[in-house]
Length: 518
View 1 (cartoon, rainbow, N blue to C red):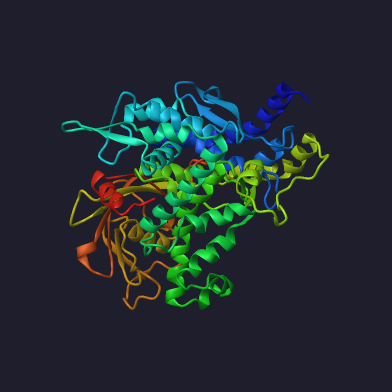
View 2 (cartoon, rainbow, N blue to C red):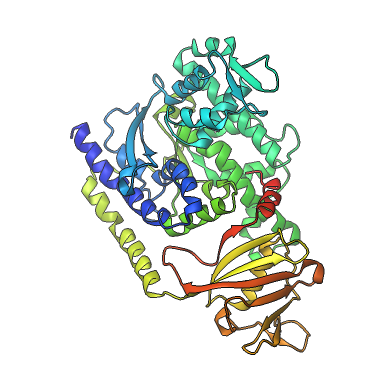
């Protein structure tokens, strides 16, 4: 089969992503749109290595690789988004071939460095300014902000930028070290770059997780590129370095975990985000020395709603975007560059002589299930109430939320406290006016107060009048009391996931960004 025919049927497969992405992203809040279009190439890249039907090896990457005739080539499709175009016209796919002799990551680094000739203005941290950043995203292979940041960090780490004297601004130019590096043979340059990538991963994890110096190093990460990667084992080895037996914690039922073990589980979630961001994503999506696979099928409804919520609150999308894969196998590049002689069995090796048509038939049940779930959401339309919660002691700290009227009242109170970083919800008082304007008070089921209990009640059980003002007082007392105003009542949107924060004050956004290190 010729390349043109291959690409046409590949695009039929890849449009499974753009059809669903457009369906949901285009129906999110207008304030989230730009962020969703900007991040689409990386979301697509994550989907490209995700099983189309759960617990199988049928990822788009594996399916497309079956058509590749040259065993030394690792082929990937890159999504480009033209935000000026409408609907499906904004999406286009570009096939890219990765080989040892002609690797796009080396070309992209040269493109970045050439942008610094004769010199370039950068910010105080050495990163490109927005206008230069936008121009570079149009020139590099993967038009993604994190990819550009990653390559910039590698250039900084390797001394490829040289400071230029300037007054009141920061300027850099391409250093002689860069010319020497790119004078090497591609294989040697790529191997050096991989070691630098491992060093960058160690530095980033040490910084974000506050690890002791030397706890992780380049060699710790490079060793996993010598064989197919069991992701769980990476985390087991990582935690052993701080004398934690992660395997025994995994085997312990959640209700039997000690307080210390629960904190370790919480740290594991954060470690997973960081490990995927600085290890598995670069080695799989940028270097292509490994081919990752996530066995859990992608959920557009949940993922896009979660990403939109992060953009609405001006948060870094990394918390939703970076999730460790289930497994990684060495690609042809990895086999030649980093592999040891004795390899374990490749768990995602596709069977031979299976047609593209049969593969598409195999994923049809999963597609039908997603369609059925969507139809259910259209049939189960409920009422939604919009509320604004404001901290009484500072009216500049507020959030607006939309919730289904079927939302349990106790869960609502707990969620509102959590949104304002108040975790102790064992005792609270919710005061709302009844139909006659008299205050009614509610407390948790376990409360000893002789007032109404929230247990078993939903928001729909309350008198929801637009303009009504409620008061929610936490256990700490009036210092943390919240005023809640009923803004609107309307039908739910089947494309949106409730409950949801739809906007918040600038002050609260600034406070939350201080603690954000994704």
